[in-house]
Length: 245
Image (cartoon, rainbow, N blue to C red; front, side, top):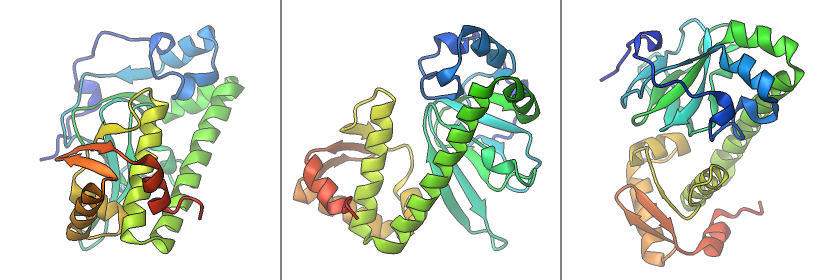
């Protein structure tokens, strides 16, 4: 089920300013001083927690806003004319989502919550106007866009050159690094996406993903308990991922 309730119609949470947000070191406010944070804070629309399956924007819709993820997780995907879904990314607290619509003014993919999620919504027109007066903010936006390009290039290399075991090992290690950067455990975490969604993203079948997880569990690389993952042997997992290539 999709929940297409307009975000602005959702009852607001108690207001939390950027300056006291524990994610400002990961988000756009990373390099701003207190006054600049206040200016950014004034254009942010916050709402209460969104349910799993909530669609923030749809492929082909008018590009109007970007989203800073505060809690929960999100996936982006494209849908072919035949109705086939291709997942293009997974996002976690501190990530900025939606900048890829700037060029055409059209949303190139659908943005959908994977679990209960909260976001900060920013009208791009206002963000663009503010960044014109705050060079540090504009630079941070450009850094975020550059990071997205690098991630897409890495994903293309992953799909072109790695086996199924290498793809999943690399996927788990990248998640580990992302959780670590957010102050969470890099060795024990929960997968908010399904096995089928992981396979879709990595270009693997559901059966292959399940077999690889089972193989890694039996070999002692990881412990798997439904969606809970614990990395037991980090170095062997890194070798399996063939990270030096």
